[in-house]
Image (cartoon, rainbow, N blue to C red; front, side):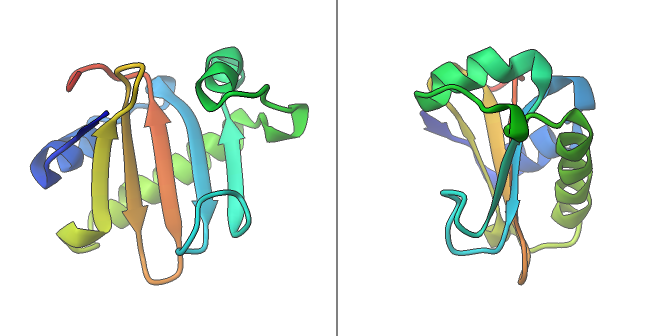
Length: 117
């Protein structure tokens, strides 16, 4: 894994397109295990994401429309939150991921973007 700088993270968020998003998390800040929110996956990347996390993605976790909605909310929130609330990293597959936290929400977006790998 490689952490991205704030500038790289903001660039990744600004260039994020719906067709590159693989999964998304939306929930309350404090934990991202799923106890305070939901992980959702794009149908196209279901198998990849299951391998990445170590167990299969269930049918009820696949929702392309909601993943796109959460991604849109994360992109909008990233435009007004402070730099300390925006984080980005490259995962073990070389894909860009980013997190945006507001006072009440945490968004995590996974992509198939390899521009920072």
